[in-house]
Amino acid sequence: MNDVRVFNFAAGPSQLPLEVLEEASKELINYKGSGQSVMEMSHRSKEFEEILNDAEKNLRSLLFIGDNYRIVFLQGGGTLQFSMVPLNLLRKSKKADYVVTGSWSKKAFSEAEKYGDALVVASSEKDNFTWIPKLKREDFRADADYVHITHNNTIYGTRFSEIPDTGDIPLVADMSSSILSQEIDVSKFGLIYAGAQKNIGPSGVTIAIIREDIIGHAPDTCPTYLDYKIHVDNNSLYNTPPCFGIYIAGEVFKLLLKRGGVKAMEEINQEKASLLYRAIEASSLYTCPVNEEDRSLMNVVFVTGSEALDKKFVSEAKAQGMINLGGHRSIGGMRASIYNAMPMEGVKALVDFMDKFEKANK
Ligand code: PMP
Image (tube, rainbow, N blue to C red; front, side, top):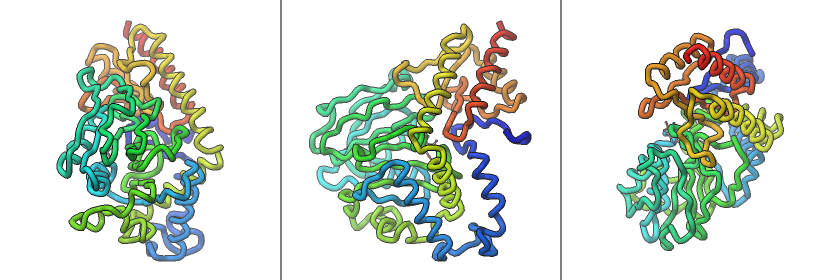
């Protein structure tokens, strides 16, 4: 680890791979001899077109995305997807079924309610979102236009360890905090979206992976920018895209391919998460409120049982170079976000600190 760098456990924006930052800093003022930075470059230039096409191609290889899916690079974060999804996908019955597993899915649901007959088919809210509902095909309305899930719940530290079977109903997944962290069978989904600022790159880029048959059905009243088709037809260049963010995302994709792809990342992520969960289980100070089988690989939440001690933990960890360990402002406690770019070394340092902190605060 570089001496000046901290271990950043933030939920996003979060740590990026040092190799990517170093490479980008070399290319910052003169990208591959073009005499300019990617930030200054025309989005219609040959250089940028190559960056964009390579990013798309590499993401396709990383996730084994079939030819019947299109990839677009958008703006507006996961939040704008909460509106784009119903605007584009509510087309026949105008029914949309939502599985509510946290604040982000609640927000997604509220947007869908504005445009159609949105229904919460399952929710774990009564238990403060500490588990993931088990769903069968019969739980969804047979004529729903789509089903929406939040694959990984960044705030509550849960994830779907099994993807619900929705039969012919397109399944839409918010993978903002899990994309590229584990292998996923894209063919099970109608649409996957993710903000970039956790596992991909800087904030400002949002990726959508859309099955072809669900593109092109937005109503005429849909704002042009919010119609997936306009972005698909224009290869993400309908308007000026977030060029620099796409470039960094592309560099991250290249690095992941070099490191053995998503399968290799998943193995490391499993190891990192188990190290942390095992430390929590073994301790008599920390507890993880999440149902064991639903625990996230990316966001590990834990508490000491005392708010004051939680605060002390977060500030002492910060002094040791482990920053942003406080839980989301809505739930408190601690949360260690351990995305792809968090090295094992960072998790080991955290586990070490947890042990020392426990001994010192008996
Ligand atoms: N979905 C999930 C799962 C998230 O974690 C977040 C943000 N942390 C969002 C959506 C909202 O994303 P954005 O801030 O990019 O709009």
